[in-house]
Image (cartoon, helix red, strand yellow):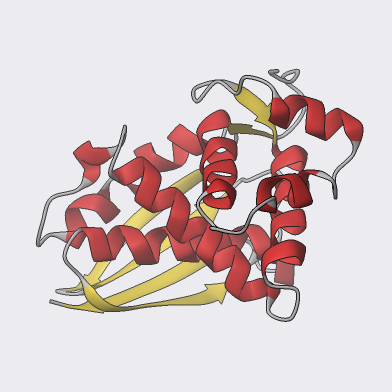
Length: 193
């Protein structure tokens, strides 16, 4: 179910990764528990065939993320959002986006942040700046809808992506956020070899 061109959109692969996370939880009925927290319209879309390369409303993804956080980690929702991002990176970087992984070289993956961004989002852009041997800054500008929860999923995604590239003790500091009034979202990444 693609949206019209005026609404913020996200790729179906993000929704699929979220739903797969729920089925891997090991709790019977976890997926159904989360879906019951959503509207009948959302359940219809999420219960149907989701095309990985199709565009879907970003608002649907935000509602799904909130329902997952409420179900899986109601006392620490931030942890749930980070885990969602990590699960998405795990699924996509070990699957269709494996070409971005070069073992022992997190900068290779991070240098492709602009292309990776376009695989997930329809509007806005992300840049990469190497700031040291094991340091980089990612900046997102022009995104239509920014929430701190979505930024936490991005932090989780890049944490896991850097780990999959061979980085250890990964730290990502969210130094600026449009949801907090800044002009862009900025993620300062550091890791050990």
